[in-house]
Length: 356
Image (cartoon, rainbow, N blue to C red; front, side):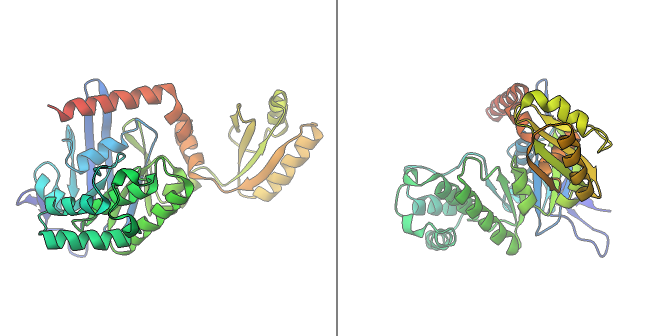
């Protein structure tokens, strides 16, 4: 049993166990009529990566803002490195770094100046700030642009500079809120390399993302949030197993034959196939023995005279998991009008709360 003592620090863990770097229990937050979080629970062991997934408006950023002491929860508790975010916010801030969705760099200042100023804000001396800036500029491969204004940097360079700034204080826990949004594929892969390097050095990471392949690639554990609730948690493979085995997928170029295609493959799976009407794509969960199901599907479609392209057998992706859990894909939800409205209402409410 743990006990709350001294500025919200939890101690007295049972012998043989270690406290998680992040502990979240029953976290709740509302903005007027909008229930952003409705009882969120998860833990993150030290030196691991948690991928927090969900569409726009799901509650991911609200979780991050609470864990980084920018918002107070309405209920529940959150503990970072043994410190309660409500009772000991200063202690929490000494242990964390944050790279938010929007970069916090000053565009008129050079990369070097940005990092040196952040160092001073962390109470480093000027010599320490200068040396820390040099080290991070080299580490993030932007030393050649160190004395250029940050506004002249590419999007990928600005994200790396912002991440470097979040590491000035040697944080034990780092929060990355959709760090690769808007980056080109090359910059995105480069950011992945940086994240892997941080974790190999012992940093604990909480990564929010809408990119399911990103969580699949980087996260040790994944928590899926939808409408302010945790709807699934586990490793990527554990979540994929919930879909139920292999998937047969194909596209029907002639959209008028989609109904015929569905009738032809009826019975290949226990559940109903998923159909993307716009793309003409059909996905069928076939469980084990996927190769036999693939051959059977080809025969049935050929017998019905339905032409297809891209016939394939594959393992489930995290997008398939999200679809199975919610009935819609993550990208569908984030593009949806309702999802955009929820996101705008919540962001507006958060901004108003910050000014009060």
